[in-house]
Length: 278
Image 1 (tube, rainbow, N blue to C red):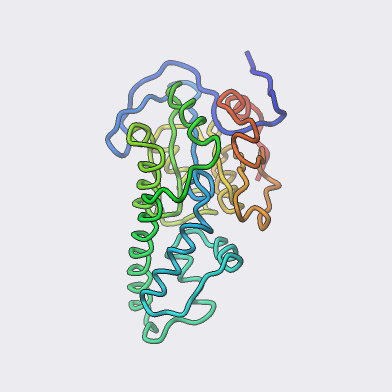
Image 2 (image 1 turned 120 degrees about the horizontal axis):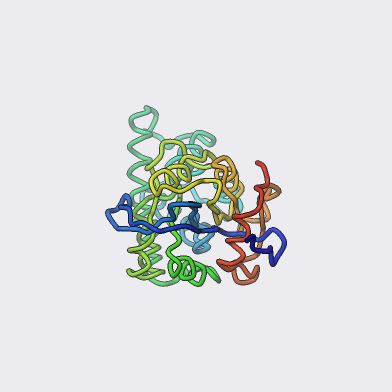
């Protein structure tokens, strides 16, 4: 039977049915996935699990710049513009391509080495912030993750941030037990980052999921475009930079998962409805 939609076109992942079998994940953990209507709950990380962009990533970049002796300072508004480029290394490259590279970094080799060095340092600073406990999870995240895991729904985090940063955030803020059951696809695991659909398609292929019955939780227009290009449903949870974004192709837009009443039941209903085309 078809579940009615309790909140119109509500959103966030999965109608799961059929028998279950255990399959190995990319990290060697064993997972249960549906053999019939394969589907999964795929979260972006930054802005979705926690509102990290303005309050953790941005100051981490600025501290790394200052330690290097650079005058670059990314304020809140400028960083919002830079977020239109997915990936931290790509973001620094786009910034300096626009304003000019620091003196002594004219060759492509020097530019690549600088960006790699600064991104490693920035990631270390970011991880220190996460461990400090100053960046909380967003409302409803743990609840929805727990509902999904309790029903053996595959859960993954798909992000343009570095794998180290994403893994650390999930482990510290969600706990080891949840971390052990969540697959992570992040950083340079794909060559083409959001808005390309590659990271979501990789997750679907690796976990043997049908993209058409997966739902993504995102907070940005480039993440929304990536989800839609992967032929997945997408729920938007507004984050600090929502005022800059166009969410017109989202299946559902809410302030946060709790405020929007997003549960696994509403998520299942969304997965069973026709997709809004990209």
